[in-house]
Image (cartoon, rainbow, N blue to C red; front, top):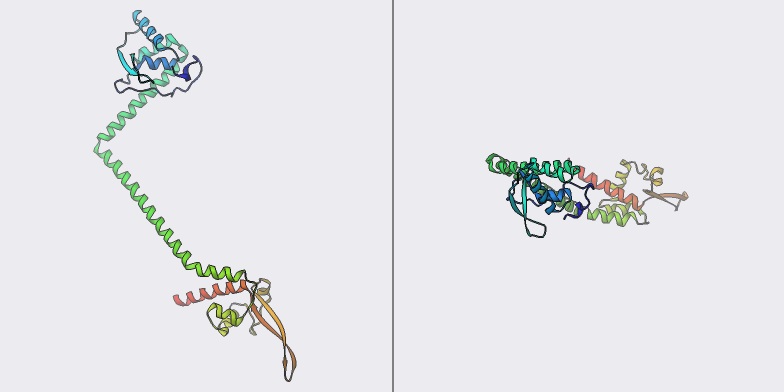
Length: 264
């Protein structure tokens, strides 16, 4: 007996599985299924069916065979829908609603199997299903191809940016400050051209002295000194220095300038 139905009158899930035999029409329900449904012994259900048939309340249903959960062959009555309600009402009236639900479930299973069989026998339906599957496969292949292209572009971008990243990591963390000549050599240009570029971008004045805003931003620094003039004596000097942070930014700006020149 099904353990979940051992307590008669206790609520249970009517969707509990029944083994459906291919030889059983779903216009009938076996006495074994009824026993499991109401939580009664199968032999008791069969006795009730026979007594009801003797009284003429129902017709004695045909006998058939099914396999139980142990794989054993069991003789069962194949009860029609109308008589199954009479039997359940005799055994356990409180299970009548559960019987209604079970019949609805069985009829829906049959309807689904009929619809599926009809669909498979229709060439147009088969063609539509095949076309839909092919479309899905093509779309999946297209997505995979696009993803492969994106991954390749990312790999190329990483490879192209590797020198820039290395330059950034090397220079930005450096505490060293560079004069214009040193910075120009690292960037790949001349001192005069770099200072002209810095004047154009508002980094230094016309006398190549750093603007205060760039010093405060950590891009530039200044080195103060003196030199002895043979006539004027000691003269103060101001030399512009480029920090590691400033050199990184200048290098990026210079690279962008060269790319713009190439596209003109």
